[in-house]
Every structure is written in structure tokens, then in C-alpha cells.
Length: 176
Ligand SMILES: [Fe+2]
Ligand SMILES: [Fe+2]
Image (cartoon, rainbow, N blue to C red; front, side, top):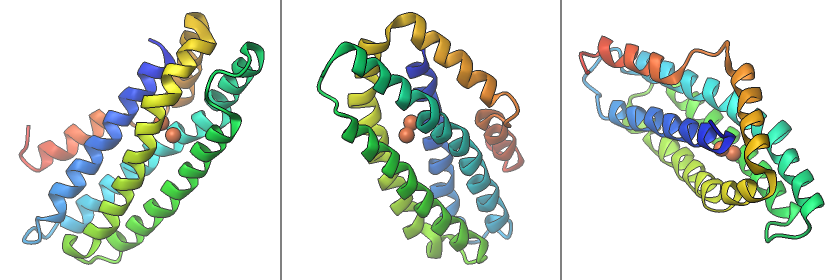
């Protein structure tokens, strides 16, 4: 599996958690709503911690190195700096969401923080998938893309997998 496919699959997992949170924001009649939302935010945080760290520390530098070797190809280093800044902005939004959820208020109170977080993440992911991933495939080549994927998998080994945890949380709720 190429690193771009692995990161893209992570993006889908992240959105899956955001969708579940959105759904739970409406369940104001359920006493476990805050607990469940807090679990989902933890899941989001765990997923993002590895994902953003890997992009900042390993994937982006590998692309920059590839660009230096290949010459200018339409994505200046500044664009990569902006993606790193997006990660910081996502972290700020996530912290706000976490605080709102942990305040114990119902979902109608933390829905705006969720939507804000979702909007910033969506814009960031569109930039990565629309511009950066195609560029990385051009400058890095198949072998490097596979090797980066292996590196990320090793870094990711100890984390609870989002699909596993999500399906456990959904089955506790009687969903399939
Ligand atoms: Fe990403
Ligand atoms: Fe990212």
C-alpha cells in the first residue's frame, strides 16, 4: 500500500468519527450522550496524533527533499508550511471541541465547535488529497511511497484502530 492510500484511508476514518459525533449531537435524550461524545473525541485525537505527526515529521520532509532533487513542480515549500499551520489550527479546534464536550453540555451546545473543526479539517484534507498527494506520487516514486507507508504502519501499531473502536461504540448503541 502506498503512503498516499494509507493517509487517505485515515482521512476517511477521521470523517467517520466526525459523522458519528454529529449524529450523537442530536441525541439529547440519551443520558450517555456526553460519555459517548467524549469517547469519540478521544478517538479523533488518537487518530490525528499519529496522522499529523507522521505528515509533519516524515511525509512532508520527504516531499520537500524529493522536490529539491526534482526541481520546481508547482508546490513550493510555502504550501507545505501552510499545511503544517493547518495542523496547528485543527489542534486548536479539536481542543475547543474537547472542552465543549467535557463541559458536559448537550450536543446542541457543542455542535458549533464540531462544525468548526469539521470545516477546517475538510479544507485541509481537500488540499492534501487534491494537490499534495498527486505531487508526492510524482516526486517520490512507487518504492518510496511504499516504504513511507511501512514506516507509518510501524508508528501506528500500538494505537487502537478507529474502525475497531467505532464499531465497538456503535454496537454498544445497537447500531451495526
Ligand atoms: Fe492528512
Ligand atoms: Fe494533514
